[in-house]
Image 1 (cartoon, rainbow, N blue to C red):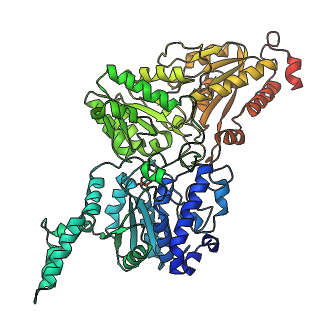
Image 2 (cartoon, rainbow, N blue to C red):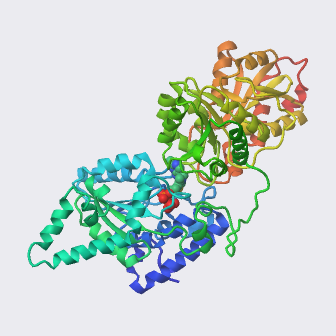
Image 3 (cartoon, rainbow, N blue to C red):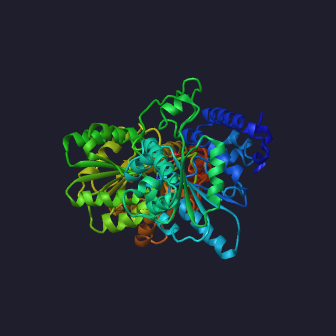
Length: 638
Ligand SMILES: Cc1ncc(C[n+]2csc(CCOP(=O)(O)OP(=O)(O)O)c2C)c(N)n1
């Protein structure tokens, strides 16, 4: 096994050239085997095996900096930097992250997870090197999908100023998660597939070079000309015209050619872009045939590629997907927007049914938001389906373009709450805070699959900005008997008791219901309230509960800071100073990767911890009205 010779970074440089091919094969086999068990990003990683090897053969780590865009394709990089054993607990709690992490290795130059940051981060590294007189190389590796993100263009624009080397590797597989979209993608496709044009160019150059005098001069003159003919001699003119040297395209599975071109790139004294053509899913037929399905996958059978666990019930995303199509059938004004996540957000169904009313704008959340605002201003009913963590990208646009003008844009905020194995960058735990502080915004969250449907219908017909947040995973099918119509700003009281009021947000319903049952069993029955709206806050409900409740417990899967609970606390403290409010949520920290149930336990968002906290709070409070409360003996005994 050649892979066994790789114990740490730079070991690959000691291999004989004939060992590189077998190493690539071993890496592929290793990745397929491991990811088939752990789940993870498969197709993107299989596509960059040779590219990563070539980078490690050309550059010396950790002195040279490799900055991976998104970072989901960094598995080979991890293997080549001594982290093979880490694959046994990949993406598990306490185990190796699926993304680059500076705290994990000094060969990981920059933490990532969200797309299109690598060129900016690389430029920062270059500027720091220029200021400190360093000599190392800085290489940003960005996919063609990530090159649809606005930040990448802002950085390219900035890169043209450089007077020292900066290498941008464009890993072009013609795919984002699904098919890539847009003008840049078309342009790259042109560069990549124009073999005829490359041959023609070579033919013309060869002929001119044969001119006894001046042939070379004509070629270089033509390279400089502004006319369309220049494109014939300088591929990648878009980049060249910005002051960024373009090299390529080069076959991204040919290590020898890659090393050669990277060495050439090192000699350029400003920004240089190396256009590398790769195949997503390379070497594993099911992933080559269906790269979108294997972009991020759960455990699967290697032989067939079939998922190991069949999904049994609908997810919230499924409910969203189906109900939106149903709504759109009857309302032609409804349009849907995604930022490169048609499959993940469930909008593919809408796209198939209403192609002209569906917009995949690329990985461009900022643009998507303002585009939605424009659509709304133009009389349409836009629904922008977006993951909670990626929505962070579009914050100013939410305030400046949507809410300031009070436009009826529906934000379908998917993957809200803990998402699990993707970790810190992907946890959707800030949206309740960052959305509810925006004037004109309405924020709601459903307790189960039926409320999800009702809330979506409510949202699409609401004349102002509204965010509907729901989590990853199976839609809860409990509490079905409670289906009061959704009314603006109104919560829903599910069980009425005294003393303790448990108020939950959205998918915390399942946990809150379990806590309620446990408390009842322990002789501490509690009132159970489904908040429904985080903004506006149902202050009427809170005031009415003050009459016979002394302990208010809020449960949300969001950071406590600025979340639902703090709003409840602030209101109650204003009207009844000293009232006991217990806020349960996520502490002021980032939540790492791991199974969601494990993470919840770690964070105290689990039944046992919450029941114990309430027991303790009741013990220290004492009942507000001992005559009517549950048996006090029982409470103090706990
Ligand atoms: C801001 C943001 N939006 C969406 C995503 C989800 N996402 C992860 S990878 C990816 C596609 C990236 O395509 P590309 O850069 O071409 O890499 P490939 O997987 O094709 O190698 C998307 C949309 C993200 N990581 N960040």
